[in-house]
Amino acid sequence: MHIPDAFMPIWQGGIYWIIALIFIFLALKWARNELTEDKIPMVAVLSAGIFAIQAFNLPVGFGTSGHLVGGALVAILLGSPYAAVFVLTLVLIIQGVIFGDGGLTTMGANILNMGVIGGFIGYYSYWGLHQATKKVYLSAAIAAWLACFISALACAVMMWLAGTFPLVPGLVAMGTYHALIGIVEGAITAGAIYLLLQARPEFSDAVTGVNAA
Image (cartoon, rainbow, N blue to C red; front, side, top):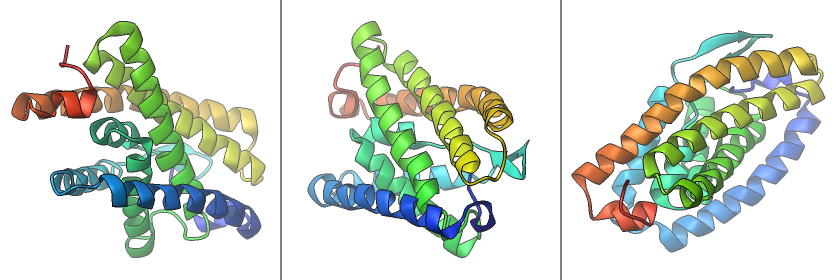
């Protein structure tokens, strides 16, 4: 899902960069106001974990690949979609600058796909599902699946707008792979929340807003 430089015209990447910078600014504002000392270790662990899980790429076709995202997990655990934007931006900058995974001109698009879309879809779908079901882990798993799947579809649309590959085959390829990858992401997200609440039950209200069920 990491879009390289050659896959998108520079002017189009610039537009996505401008949009991404708005969310990055809001994410930095969140960090300044909400990133307390007790949350910094969690941010570090989540950043390292997401960096690791995104390293496993599966070829999708059309020269792109699929992988886990992690935006929903960050947004749910830290209580804000801007937390996902903050963490994913850090991860994507390191991946793009140091390891060449994803382009620099297209980094704004990658931040939008994985940080913004993944974070917002994951966070708000989680709370909507939780209010309906009262099930923390089920809601987290479904929200993570949705975040992964919709981020992949957004990436396919971007690639179509860039003229890189056709819309319907791109949606089918990215959607099919990430529908399957999303199942793994949902399981990892629910499992991570379960382990956190088992180890640190005092985080239950602060992280999920309810007692885990």
